[in-house]
Image 1: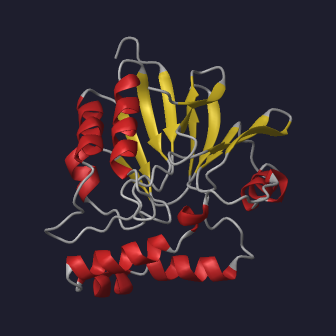
Image 2 (image 1 turned 180 degrees about the horizontal axis):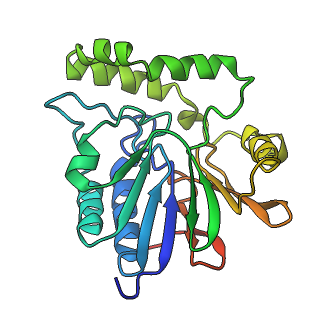
Length: 249
């Protein structure tokens, strides 16, 4: 793939979010961004919550997202390696996207080397062992038994329940002021602790809808990728440096 040298990272697009009223415009913008990186992307990492809700029945998949799925399939067909990490909103991605698009699915964090640098990649939820309530909720959502029970519901009813849940999420409250101190965040504390046992050049997370690019310790960096609701942001690594950027068509 001559000319394709950059590694791209993006998270929290929340396609189809019922709490938002500009889903079509955001999907078109995200599709335009995928077009804009086509000529120089070597690998693409989708770090969770790309969809606001996703559930696959054996014969049924969610309606919509045609433009984005088509762009991703075209990238994969052209040789781009695409990695999809499940987030707390799209945890129920199963085999449809890997089979139809050709992407690699990750349900857990990934430690990998990219262009000589060591990366810790994850959506970022569930890193705080003291958050018992959320960890219990995540255990419920990842339960095979409960997934099977949910799949017995008619899709219209099941998606209605999921969308009602999503409307009550913090997506509907993003415009409210929220104090954010990155060093108090579970992701920062997790990275600090992890560095005591293993060196990582870049910890990259989504989930918090904030754009952060800070040094933790002697060159190791914590990156929070922002979102595609207020920031329209992404990360790019060229082998030497990592930059957070905002997309403007």
